[in-house]
Length: 295
Image (tube, rainbow, N blue to C red; front, side, top):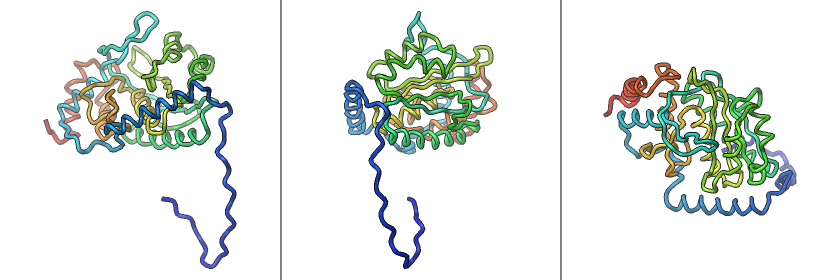
């Protein structure tokens, strides 16, 4: 709620003219408009099934053992593997990875994304990065000054012809990543790629692509999931609940359980480069501390 100051007895000011919504610099194509209608139906269908919940999932019991195992699954396994020039979904054990440097998130838009939508997304990401910083204890911010986590909200035609802009944002970006972005299947709502040192287990750059055709709730869900995954919780799990790290779309936004997972990832007892075997006892210890030892 916003409160406006007023002066008793003062004459009412003349109403200001309401400016029409600013049109995008480039009108969305017919293909993009068709996708907008499709994703509006998808969102409506998911909500009608009780999915895309906007609460934090406090009604769902959570034990320390399940918290620990979920953490190990989403932090110590990759969701995709490279096979030749393709990314193939296949959970593969890896080492713990996270950011050691401050995470500076930039938010950029394709020319056909309307200004009102851009404003909504800027507010969403600004508030969300503050929440992530609080959950992790690590600096995460929305900033266009030397960004290292690039989020692009693109409509269909832009996504198909955005290689030059992506190369400018991430010099050295590989052909497989560019091809993956151009050839996203319609049922892939959004995607994130994080890059860093295999030797140290630390991330230093990330890139997320979010479809501009999504309605607000679905687009906000993408922003929440991809930025959080880009911080180091790289995998999804069917057992993660209540969580956005689960492809069932039950929750739209970061849950209280997800905040616990992020705080575990950035706990100083967890170190980049740890193996599953090294991280397991520490994960159980931290989870027990956070949930009062409930098994």
